[in-house]
Image (tube, rainbow over all chains, first blue to last red; front, side, top):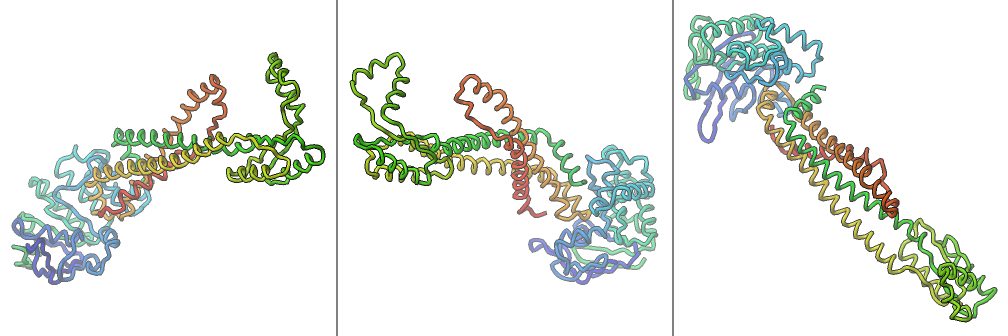
Length: 220
Length: 288
């Protein structure tokens, strides 16, 4: 579950977000959209605590950001899976090691890591690419690896910032299919996108940001 | 285990920079340990100095019998004295003749024996300080019947001055080189950290704690220091085997040089701690 109550963020007197209040229910999949500079990326930075809000309260995966000490942030992030437009994969490590990293950070034993990594690779249909390096894969495949890495730790919330930004239509559909599959298992998902095609024919809620303000948060 | 793997991967990935750091550390630790060995040897030699130094107590011409025994008893009573031997003027002349060998005719020109009765006084090796030797000499000189005391004062003063100077030099070089080795590890780890900045950013997003990020760098610093120390030990072993040993054969004076072999094991451990210290300093103030 994600709750923002009157959240504001300002950078050098430039308002990035102003009085944002929104709720994404547990197990819901919702979208955040808006033009470039609307504040989508700032909103996501607040959600995975790369930044802290100047005003308002933010609750995610059961943690209240205001009460959270810096030393507790890593533990919150283990409950949040994040997918980026630029993938953020380690190019000098194999697909297997990239995904396993999320579990090694948690101190999980290698035998369990092996089982879980192969399980998520199977889910994104890339089991045969376990020993490949990211740069030998297509953009769509790299994004599927990023998704696999973000869900291998079984997070309760998943954030995806422009997950299909660099992908063609076919890969876009494939990625959205995976998100739906993950959502069906009960994971709360919030996707930031300016691609209307992703949410136009769905019954999901869409939050529209413009100039740092929440213009619309509708039930479709 | 995973941290160690990351540390080793990083060392191999940046191998040329790390090899250069290790070689620099190796050379510095070798110089440091060489200075330590020189100071150690001078300490060892000067520790034996009082024992090797014989005080010759010359008696006045008219001292005889009971008075000689009284002087001997008074000198022996001093706690710094190891042994005291009476040398009669006849024995001294015999000894002198042995020194001159075939040229002993020179002594015949004197007619009667020109030498005096004397005592050879040897000092204990442990715990005898320069000031105590001077005090003993003053005490002996004040004994009735003693004419003079001969000893290598100038030699002893020079050796003690050399010892003091070497200690100060050793300490200065030690501090400079310890700081230099720590700085090399500090700089190496800091560079490695910045080269891995994108990787660290990803670790953080996945929920890595500060310790998870730091430990591989601490290990890296320690390994660089350890291997640098091992290179220093190798240099010391090579220097000893191919240089000092040959010198000992060619110039017998060098046989007095002693190299404690425990230095060979100590150096890598010392390097490890300096490397760890450098890494801790490098990451100490970084915010990530």
